[in-house]
Image 1 (cartoon, rainbow, N blue to C red):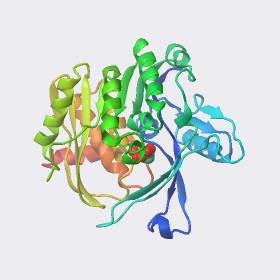
Image 2: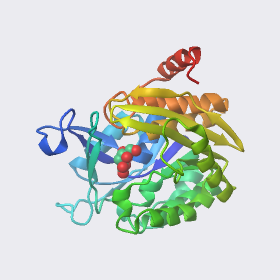
Image 3: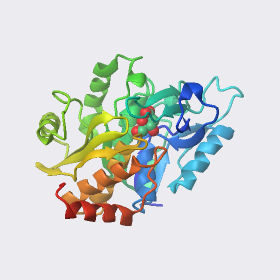
Length: 343
Ligand SMILES: O=C(O)C(=O)C[C@H](O)[C@H](O)CO
């Protein structure tokens, strides 16, 4: 089975209290989610790509629920590593997280409960990457800074995956996705940067930027351009860097766009000022899915960045981490934006 895109990362069960708060909830809706997985979920659901996820789950009812949700999202589950359940989750467990989406001046709040998860305990040499990239065949491999920050051994597993992918001609993408809750145990942002420096030489396409010189006041393209150029200079092997542009005005109103740098040229995505948001989580992953689709199909770069931006924008209009959209809906939104003056 040849996959268009394979993601490597943790897939957790997300507990969503809906319109109320985590600390006052009586019921939760559950979704599956994870920064790396969400990208392939968007690629299969919206863009019709053949995708799979490499993750590890504990063999119990929670693990089976996560797996069933992954299957329902159209992502292949054959490469999931199953670990035995010890009855209480002491040796390893399935990660869960709680997330309330915020409203107005109340920001979104998350609480992870993911320590000792099955995937965080993976060691180099445990996954047969040669079989995956050499025998199954994968056009594009996607992972990111969440996976790399799960434990002290995670970055080494990411590195061996990247090396195996590249040795078989697979394109490698990495989303910086800095999560303070993960890195605080190891030395925070400085440690995350050190790990990124170690991994980036093995990356072709980077999502995100490490830092902006200052907080943007609006969709200030120049500020984002400078940050991208700095990364491109430090890592000359990078062919592509794509970043969302987000200015938070309130939990429900953001300015939103994206910028794509490819082999020296910039492409500014369609701009949404005062975009109304229902649930912002997963927008960056939906953005990455749009970019990967554009590159896999060799679409014009303007179309590629626009697909990233509109897919991310639409993903924020629905609950949960994942895209609920179809390609014709993206095209329709783009057509109306093109007719306006918003580019
Ligand atoms: O933040 C994390 O670690 C997650 O994986 C949870 C969400 O799925 C992720 O933030 C969405 O990008």
